[in-house]
Length: 463
Image (cartoon, rainbow, N blue to C red; front, side):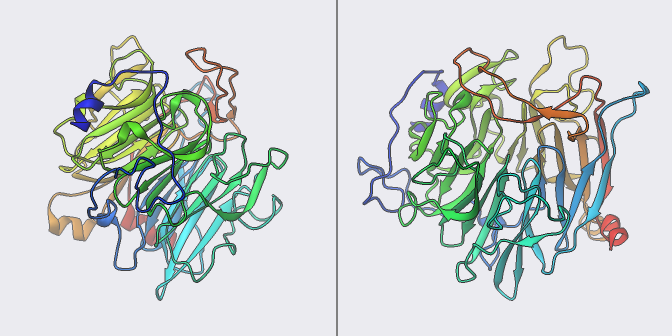
């Protein structure tokens, strides 16, 4: 059985990776086999009649975003550095962003964000933030514009309705409702953008460009990127990945870069309904509610860090019917159908909450239920690099209607004031693969313990 194979699968240095043939259709692999029988699109619970995916949270490397009543709210972190030694945690400062249309989805990268809007059935994509590598999709690499003023990404045709957007690092992606993918932003030799030719002399692709290798061959329903590696899911539940092989994040069983889009052979026969990518690990949810992970593991299977080059089922989460996962830099969270949250990985940043690992000598927590308090039912989760976000509402329906949901945050955001771009010459196992850039907190940083915000009151105040 495909799932039992994933459960017993160990870390191996190589595997056979199926490529996409020029004649393949609807996830048919080169050998003529199909990854899974056709079934209902995995994002159906999040897709409305318009075909647009709607999520309310987006975790970024530093700041994060909340979407409430069509209004994007920028969750800006103050410095995490405890300069006075008073043990003062950072603050999260919400700021509403003015966008000339109703926003239905937001995605966050390291220093930029994408906003998907919907008006009278017409979708438009706006971008805001830094543009060092053309990640705003405005046709240039200029960084002199107002970072807080959204600009429309004109490279996406009005005749191609967009269903979702995603960001990671300095890379942006857009997914059409018909399943085609566009990428733009930082161009790397690893091929993270998925374009046929990579020009290493150009630091960025400033306009949306189709991923031609998948066009009319794979009907994608989700795209995720860490800024170094990109992965997409098809409507049949097959997973395809390309880009950096650092820590084996692409799931192809090795640490070499994969500039060409390839099906993840280790997931063949196991339909995947959702995936989340961190810089050094990936977490996915199977159709049966199982959680599958690969890359640099911390707390997933044991306390010590280990390299898992092939997808493997997380035994501790079996039979819990997980419906959503999120990956941070060194931590992960999972949401069950019953509204319970489970977390694992590094807890030094406070991203797994407080009190979960008191008395432990190591810095890694194994898979455990996150005790957040009397939150009610958790509806959605998200991870920033070093923080986690949760949307919860009361179990009582009447109280839920009157009060509205709460946003809970824990951990720390990393700003350029107290972090620097992190680079390493080799991976933890000494394989020599380059590490992705990421902002890291200063040694004296103080994490934020669980902080609630009532979304209804927050929106009323900001408007």
